[in-house]
Length: 170
Image 1 (spheres, rainbow, N blue to C red):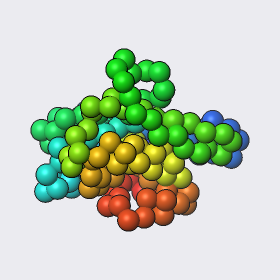
Image 2: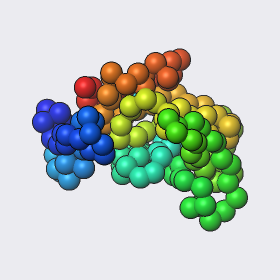
Image 3: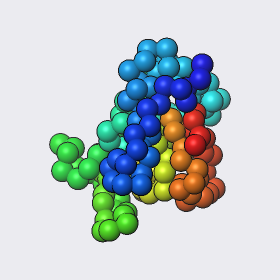
């Protein structure tokens, strides 16, 4: 299936000059969503994944479905203050300021094999922060997978040293 044909492109969103690649049109299409998840699962199945970790919010939609397909657990990486139990946090730099992600302190056991999943790889900031959070918890990141990669933004370079792939590359 041509997954690229299911992505809606929105010019000048969220600001002028940006061409936004909207994954929601892919995930509302049952055949495309299944093809995306099945493709990602087939790509990492041999890596013996214990957990899938996805940052909010679209990482939840893709990551939880992938975890189900792999028979793995799913861990939510959330913005600060959203998780009810004790957390660990990783702060990371944005273009203007900082942001943080958190997981529960007991979400990942040392040595568990983890795939980090999100809808989009752009500059790599969120993905790298998620990877660092997994590693801080003692997990081993064996892969990072994305529905879409915007190759001109250099996210793959930010994740150098990790097994990175995307279903759709622009």
